[in-house]
Length: 395
Ligand code: NZQ
Ligand code: ZN
Image (cartoon, rainbow, N blue to C red; front, side, top):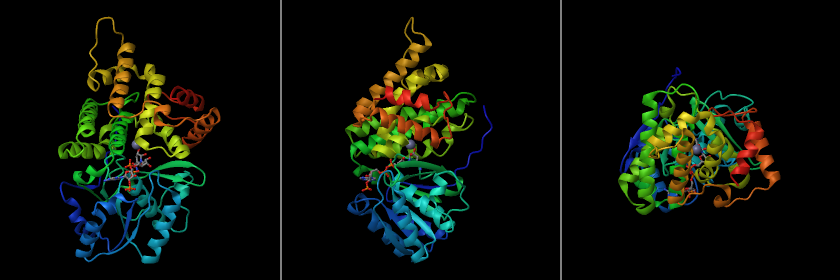
């Protein structure tokens, strides 16, 4: 087991109608002039945006709004938010939406705390953040875990680069989680979210070295729970209990809890997917489902005992006579593919609907290698040539 620090300062306000507390919460955290940041139409259509504004008004809080954040959020929208916030003396950013809106809010908050420097430099990893304005969210989709994470992922739409910047400065002050708000999601988004939640735990689970029994048990329990309720929601999208289980899982999967004592995390599947998102604008969770089976088959021999444990304790594979550890690991990966198919998620890029050319594969691998400074991975350390092979396996 490795030494670790666990830092999860975000207050969680969970349950029905929790969004009505937003005004008081912003006040409690010192917000006086708020940028309300949101995505396309969903928060307007559901009436959520109006309820949030009512609550802010009732608390006597000035607010200005900026919508239009797209999935795989753009740097251009971040710059627009910075400009608007400066004009109105904004001191608190409130994201009403999912990972994309929260990440856009985080980037605006970084930029406002350091107006002299270009915020993209954080994502290009040429400097670190000096500060971050306080921010919080009213969550509308269980997926990215950005509501409690220290991570922020932005796409530079001019270059097609999708890049992450991780810093505890951006951990949100509070997260309002009303599972009912997620009931309007299209099934594809619900299921992509479930894949992403699982992947945040699996990235920390498939590591070499360290490992702590309690962390493993928490991770396996979380994964089994998400598998169970993803299937329930596929059939019964209005099921409140299932929505609640998945929503809480989204936060716990990416606030560090399921990695304590492990070797930091693998995160190769995530970085491989970010290139697919940057180039083809795919939905993040579905992109992960499309690349994970190929990644798993490429690396499993170097982390065999973890793949065997996963097969047994998460996928419920029963070892039959004559089955070797390798057979068990491969059976676990195949069971995962069956699960993805059962919730209409892809297991390769063709099922995802993208068909990268040889040239595009080489470009994605080169860009991924650049983004990670040469190599990435814990289950197996991957270099550019490995990334090319995995992309090709995933076609
Ligand atoms: O824009 P609207 O109209 O709101 O539609 C959104 C969007 O099209 C829709 N939606 C959200 N809530 C809804 C709803 N539709 C109906 N009813 C609701 N209640 O769902 C679509 C997807 O939203 P998005 O915010 O993009 O989803 P998600 O939370 O999956 O975020 C994905 C982004 O987060 C990044 C991903 O790379 C991607 O850019 N990630 C961020 C992380 C972090 N900051 O910690 C970690 C993750 O690994 C991930 O990389
Ligand atoms: Zn993710």
